[in-house]
Length: 113
Image (tube, rainbow, N blue to C red; front, side):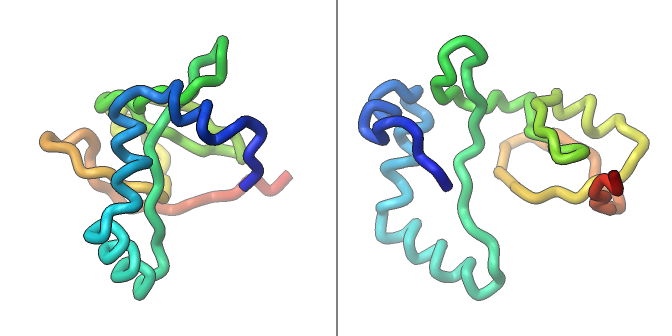
């Protein structure tokens, strides 16, 4: 990962919800969960978006998800993703109190050209 801005100034400009994530990763119990996860090879990510004008971090809204297709990333409503007819492979997860997507068989396809 390449950091192009001062991490402290980025942290200061983050919404409270994302600063909470950054602080939580240092907690003993979160570090213990991360250690346990490594037995299965996943990591922990911070779901987020960026402001299109400033590039500042923004909280990823509950009704949005990040989608990668053809090596390009976009943000889609969870319902739009659930309604798609093609299959996809989820690569990040977040618990939400209400279900936001329909489970289906998945297949991740990389572009061939």
